[in-house]
Amino acid sequence: MPGCATSKSRPIFARVYAGVSVDMDRRGGAEHRVRLLAGLSGRVVEVGAGNGQNFAHYPPEVEEVLAVEPEPHLRAMAERAAAAAPVQVRVVDGAAEAIPAPDGCFDAAVASLMLCTVSDQRLALAEIKRVLRPGGELRFYEHVISRRPALAALQRLMDATFWPLVAGGCHCARETGSQIVAAGFVVEREERFSFRALRLQPAVPHILGLARKAS
Ligand SMILES: C[S@@+](CC[C@H](N)C(=O)[O-])C[C@H]1O[C@@H](n2cnc3c(N)ncnc32)[C@H](O)[C@@H]1O
Image (cartoon, rainbow, N blue to C red):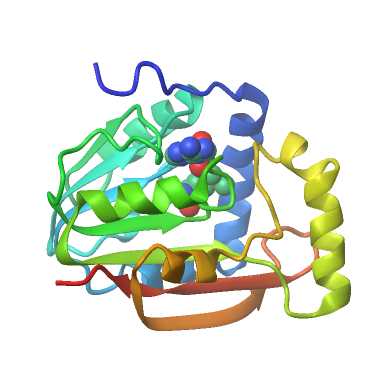
């Protein structure tokens, strides 16, 4: 069965994120998700789908979403969100580093607030590229390291100390935009903006855009 070896139980984080993601979406995250997914069509893989907060925002031109999520509690929530989604969503166990799908079978991939968490970003991006067809798109929405030295230093310090432990493996100081380019994607559009996802958190830079696998 795909993904049996990849299940990653983080029950406390999963329950906290279920609440936090709803609050974050009220603060503007939902509007970011709409921009992330606008214009998608065909077959889509969403990697690290969490509790399925994106599902409600897929446009009707999307034929099917394969939603890959390794955490069992979040996956169960994603299954409930899938049942209410406007498009067909199939939720499966699995990880970004070993996406349970053949080469080249998706028109698009979605990475939203998850490349901060994967243990091997390079491998995850290589896997996403593998399952995309030539010319397929990667839609990304990620928080990244600041260009302001003081905030970047704080983000690095948080990563080296407590943050990944309390935030389900999340890292705040990743250079995800550069990694997407290093993986061989061509970035066609990218917005960079500051967003305070949580009330008690500083506003941090986010990137949202579209990168394409070469045809
Ligand atoms: C901050 S949550 C974001 C969830 C969702 N994408 C969203 O936009 O709300 C990070 C997600 O990445 C998942 N995750 C962690 N490690 C992963 C991996 N190696 N492969 C795929 N997903 C992973 C977590 O279980 C969690 O659902």
